[in-house]
Image (tube, rainbow, N blue to C red; front, side):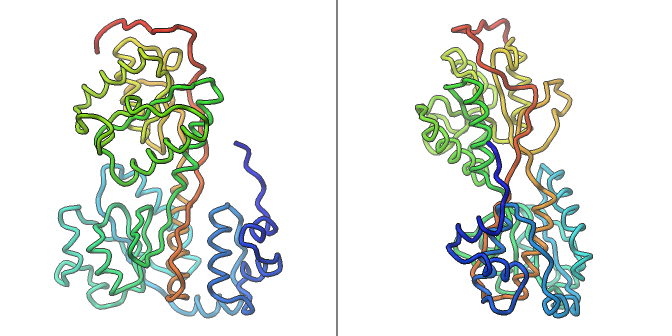
Length: 360
């Protein structure tokens, strides 16, 4: 999908305001109220418009004060994304007179952050200006944290809390992958995840179904594997059973499979290759995000790149904005992903039924 050049005129038309107002909002002009400025900066960030530097007055008021910001991380399996978030933060915080304090905890122990004896000393001494939350923090804990200090969440949204979120446009990323498969000629496209879906995977499934209808394709529950909530009779199938389900659907003509992450995509590729299928000659596979093949020997996966560095940088900027405008409406910034073509997608073969050569 071609990406148009974003201008102030486009931002003005989308917000139904004048171009001079957009220009003033982006430069931090005092004639523009906080709400309008927030709306303009948020849309500009989402669209990828390069926001110019802040006004001299704003710089003086912000740089004069040093901020200590906590980065609270619930440890997760895909630590590479956390490292990339942090790299994005580091490219930004020094310019804004901010220092970062990192605190890690497991999902089972994250509630301890509310107890003074387990808190970082700077938090216990009330020295933190704000907190950036990374990975899946329970809403009940986030609500109590937010009552003490301003918070910004990376990726995870909290509907009932006035917390800014910096994330990615899941729908746009899935749409780019679906369009790619559709343009190759695929009309039966499956959706695959390894276990019951929550959060991120559920959002990607929603975007998948939206693209199915947008492209005029027919939604079939059997083309979905690993979904919880009634799509499959057994929502917690073992991975081996899921692979067998995929094989059955391939025989029915489902020659393209969209996976919820790159590691899952590479694992599906490895398993199907073990069954004797040729990827991509007989079956196309896409992933989502980062992560290598883990030594599986599979071709380079067709996927979308998640802008981790930009997410980290925007989280720091958003928290600083929240400190300046504590009563402004909450903002959810969605950054776009880019299609990254690999060697696991191709036009569907003309064979009506691929031959199963061997069991994995």
